[in-house]
Length: 98
Image (cartoon, rainbow, N blue to C red; front, side):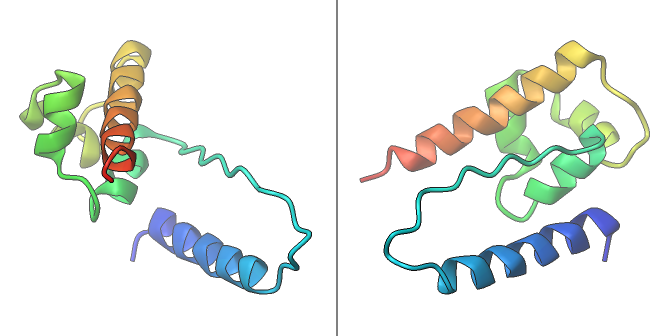
């Protein structure tokens, strides 16, 4: 298991514990995930979103995304932002499902 996945799983276990022990007066929480590099970002969402889907929404070639995910290449900051926006677009589309 990759280190980023184990941190993600530990965080999910912690969140599950926190939400199960909250009272009815608890307020809403906002969680922000900061990934150290694009490879860990892509690998963290890989079980939920394919590189092909990210490629379609970000406009970045799928082969190049694969190189980023495997750490073979490092994207420029503008490319990283396009990847993040592509994942956000997918998330918004999923949230719109009624």
